[in-house]
Picture: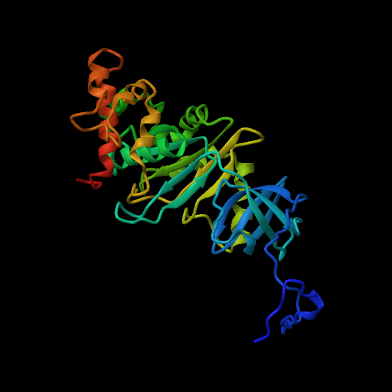
Length: 336
């Protein structure tokens, strides 16, 4: 073996030839400072439909992003053909920092978390008052995911013509969650959509709900007809005949009025990824009381300082009960 001294001339060192004849790879990646800004509207089998200014652009993720995936709502930087013409493809070279994330796991034993939506301001939890029956455990799980991900919750109750909302409102009254009650008749004549829309203007709102609660019907009523044409454009690009909510889809409410993100109907909402210590941030009246809690306190054990905090009159006992009920959703299966 040939050995080199301290003062070896570089020309004296042999280099391995590049058999493929292309340029050698480097760890220095381009910055793409001239990349255009866009928003991901939907994702389908590795192809991402993005809005760039007023154009619908189909793109794929650059290899240099590695395993990092872009999801609906992500703000991204794109290069390549941004014309939006048929058979053109752009490239996503950067995913900007997210303001919020809605995550879920398949179940509570699944360690793999899935980001459903990025950069949403609020989470509209759609629940039918009857047909199908309300599932408070699923609502609780969606609330925990919203609080953990930095989204404000909104409760939308449908089918009030079949059952009154009183029981459900009593269960969630202490959480101070804004809510809207709708009926099927109101959806048909547009009255419900107008009241729901008051809670959405200027915001990015992700809609979640169990199949059959009327979530997509409500979304269609909210989005103006001229804006819904975007759905057809998106489906034409991704190859689907129509949107059946098999993947999340972002739709504009109107010019500068906000966005609605329709997500697939959920049967379960796993919380394996949730750190219970973050849920307390959604309870500002209780959070100061945790200062005296033991390390890694679950906030539902004999030494929890929140009991004394509430007993001293700093917060309503009902609020502590609500917090503990939400935290307990990680320990109980839906339907238990």
